[in-house]
Image (cartoon, rainbow, N blue to C red; front, side, top):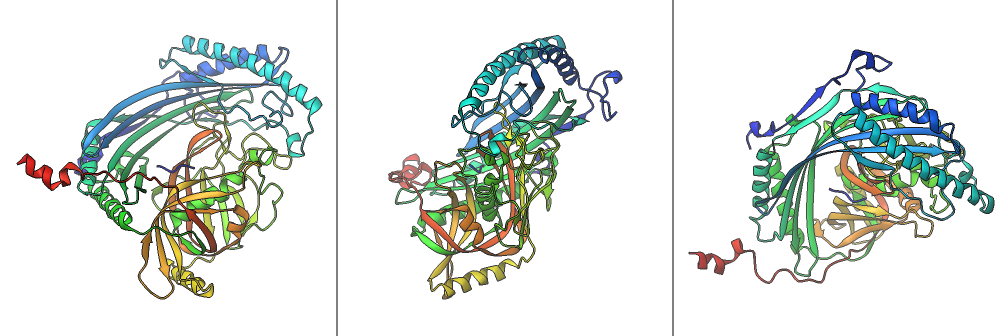
Length: 578
């Protein structure tokens, strides 16, 4: 996963409006919740017409679905005291899923070791609510996708005659789900970019006050997304979501050539909850202080020993080490490592730890959870799914690609626009039944260091993100990139900031070595890139103490820092300007 990652009146610079869909009362959803949006009505009409014909074709379409995603996006970005860009964009994306064959075996079935195409069946469509035009665009895309699915099914049936099938490979290709009918209010965002243009200039200018700053970027984004879904099982869904984000990034270069990056972000759902200038200024100063300290910090050596991860760092650890390996589609793919495929009902981590993935939770302690959504990208309602109960693995994250013993989705089929949905994480939430205050957890770290006769342990205070290998042809390993690392000495010396290491390890061993946790959860919001593209996620965890964790040297640059200091910090340049 790649993490990301003034006056009160200035904060009210963007507006979210929630409105009913403008359409006749006769087009109301069957549950009476709200009027049927015109776009959804057009989609349903064309769906009925197309399926009536294609379900009788040879080969026959057994399932047909349409999704239209209407996206409003605004972005303002600045660097080193100046404006880089300021823009707004709107677009609509149509996805047609035409499945030919049957729920058991259809045109999407993976053939041998060939990697499936994750590119979504989809295309851009007109922005106007001109229903005849929209229906014509849907008609053309439906024909294209039916033809492609028909050709794919021929190859699938041929492969069945010559290839050995694994147990999970014999699971159905698609699950039949109870249809949802839910018409939520439409979300519209209006963003006044001018105040944000001023703010990104000021924030990045503040970074430039430090002579250590090589580059700085601040970016504000606003996203309003309205999604419409309908399928031949009877689903009719319309919902909207809005999300605002401010990202702060500053970069330096140490004397030995290593890049020093510091980053933080703020996420919120309502414009009135935007962080104020005082909050942002404090974050800027904190990043500058850490950047300057890291620039002068010594390089760390490779290490294996006791390690304490703060909550945000532990959250990324669980996302990479555990979360990706319980995504359901990996359990039926012979090319995957399948770390946990046969371990349901077994103890895979300490009994004081439980883990759920709950996209229905929007906030935790008033902090936004980025991985929340009401319905997944296959029209299944988001569901809180208990993955680990007191250390015992209970189930997997499921899309509509079923397993032999888990025949239905639990609402985790997700994708970036332009990709095909697969099982992905949403809000991965780790809890502990015997957490202790962080100060006590730190004392436990020191005690472990002494027991193992080591001079120090490591404390991971902040983390950038990481990645994991899950394929069978690769080592079943993960790597997490810490940004702020301290040596904690057993003899009582002050902590020492160090740099230049990555956390490395293997999942089964690493999870078994968790020995204690704190009593307070922390949130990491980021974007996770995997097979179905980049999706917003949250990971929540208390701090964790691991009895042994391995660190390797971080890849670095050999380029020297700039020969001259920045102009504003060059005494000779200032003298020439006088």
